[in-house]
Length: 100
Image (tube, helix red, strand yellow):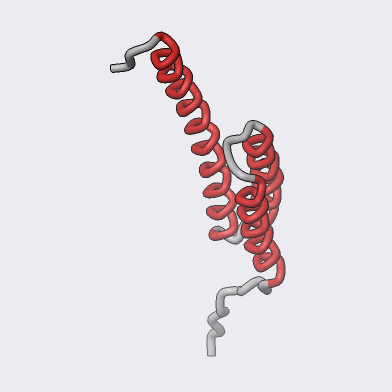
């Protein structure tokens, strides 16, 4: 138990800030996972669209002080690399069965 009014207030403020940060971190992780899932499905259009959304969410988290700018840059770079690799891979067509 806190002994002073200021210590009590710090507990309240800390809890409020923790919940705010947790919400933004969760949101950031969610958009990153959505981009990764789109890449896994080899859906380039959706991956690019979600990547743009993810960049926005990650940048907002940096502005709000939730994550460090270098962490944000690393996450965006990894997503960009996934999409670049998806663009480079040729479309693999299923083998056709010829009736001989």
